[in-house]
Length: 167
Ligand SMILES: Nc1nc2c(c(=O)[nH]1)N=C(CO)CN2
Image (cartoon, rainbow, N blue to C red; front, side, top):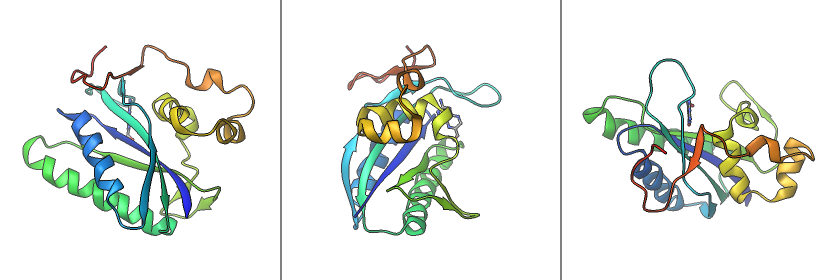
């Protein structure tokens, strides 16, 4: 069993539901066990142009899938969500990023693990900090981890029953 961390992000009309549905789908994959899930966060979209706010979360799973198989599984869940949603809203609706696969370092054209941008993204680090052991965070971020995932105006915790994604 490999402990693996996956980041989820969505910024469509019902991004919270997108993320929660994806977590349920992931929890039901054979060869995967859901270990923990972060709180849900609202976040200002990082990227070009005017975009809706995101909902972001991170989960930990234990899996017997190889990293390429896990990646393929994540991509197929993404495309299921895309296909369903594209009919109505025509947008990219769900991102599933493989952040960490045990302690593996993977550098292939298809997959880079640890995820190359995870350490510069508050919307990944803050939810990761909800669930990752402190020693894991220290391993990747060094001793002074607090600054990397402090709360700020671009990122806020969503209450469990909070349907709105603006602060
Ligand atoms: N706040 C936020 N911004 C983003 C996100 C995301 O998940 N959250 N994902 C992106 C594409 O990977 C681009 N920008």
